[in-house]
Length: 307
Image (tube, rainbow, N blue to C red):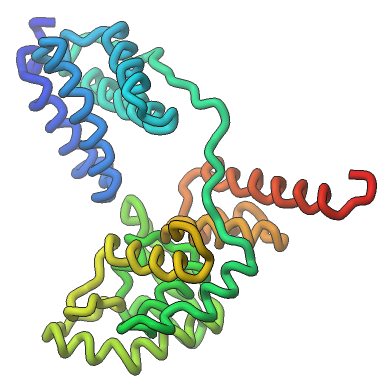
């Protein structure tokens, strides 16, 4: 391997080159890059304990040992599977870039039996959450608009935080969002969500903007008047849902799951849901068909005399 230009570089340098490639060439989102970075930190920590200095010295057995180590330390199957996929991407990049001679991760696999069912709300829970959210909060109109919009459109929390006023067409009920990989798409919002959003923009956002001397056009602002961030949105959704539907609350992503599940349950076709969610691959959307079938099975078991 001595003929390769990065063979003597340490693992950290090679990982850095890979992350730069993902950011500048693959144009991955900040959240996805953060996930890759975290997974690779676990891997390089493992290599440090093994006294391995460069990725050119890693073989297939070592990769399998790392995955086994992660499983033994209590990480979920889905997390270990994601780290397996990350390593495949890393070593494919190193091989394609002529940094290493051969790819030790070519046959690396970590099958996940089944798939976790995403958390989603029933229609009755959504009705309570949508109707009563924001009632007690200091920024109640904003919080209610956030809840309504996440459920009505199925957009990601990062897309919600990046929304600007020009992205919202109240007349047509269409929002323009920029998703993963800077892919732009149009999503639909119903009258309740648009009404909640209009009330927030007219009655609450101006005061928030003045408080922070903010003159930009980002739709959702924090209580100090600066653009809201995903962590704040997650806290808002969890707090509202904890009070109204019980338990530990749900995440904004659960409202995205709920959006897709309810559409399919009421007859929407898979391609339309894929477009609205901004999924690049329809296989990602198919998980919601399993959710819908599960609900149908439960309804059948509850209702049919000879179920």
